[in-house]
Length: 386
Image (cartoon, rainbow, N blue to C red):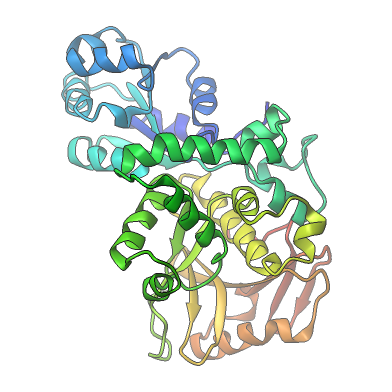
């Protein structure tokens, strides 16, 4: 069993808050995590139709069955239950009474903000991070193997081949989650859209351009992207909001939460295929961006990750904001360091007054070097900002 970094944080939250909520992609390990973290709690899965029906028809009786702590999995299926949870935690005054989990972020968070505001600690669990796999039998030495393999627990815990896991995951996702979130009649077109998004990883998400390149309208693209975001398939990395030179691009960039799924959609089946593939750079960038996000989410923190680009093409791949400081990070898929890799860091330092010791270059090689305009760090030894 691979230990999850989030465990101690959710256990600590349960000692000070009545409700703990954990969202994340389907099969990211939420159920395993919460069962191990709260072994004495009763467990109810609302994907089970009889359990769901009982919770919907008799919510008070359902909750009263479990007076000593209850895990409610896929809680978004019975949103009316949340009001009864609010009444119960207000009545009892107990902390750690309920643990809620779900794989549709918007549906779950909408009900939480309506009914449980101020009573719930919210966490996100993504698939494994390299930090969690380090020191286990699953640790890999090649970043491109990680990128193709992805990080879903079943691939590691059960040894499921990625070639088998991801097509099945996509089929289940389309048939179950997509139909629940949106009444999409043409799933084949939606699947084509998902594959199109995989080919746009690391690019500015331009609805107009995508609409012109496809037969999909802009409202359709916007609606379908919201499905990908809600179900933790893809996300938009926002631009950094501070105007250093007042000529910034303000459109977000598109990434996937798991590179293994993206590689499967793109037909990339091995590390050797990826190393010569046109998407090598964008997928490596995606991999590093999500690793930084996981590091923060696994501590119960907001990601606070951005990118920066001005209208003349100067760009920083990733900005991490921590304790009111910003840390610019350039990402390169090369295994060899080159002097011109640092030029964007140098430019950003000039206009933002960010010191070089807060600037980093993360690349696919193994050496660590301190340069004039920042520190070069290997992909498997990411900088920390403590």
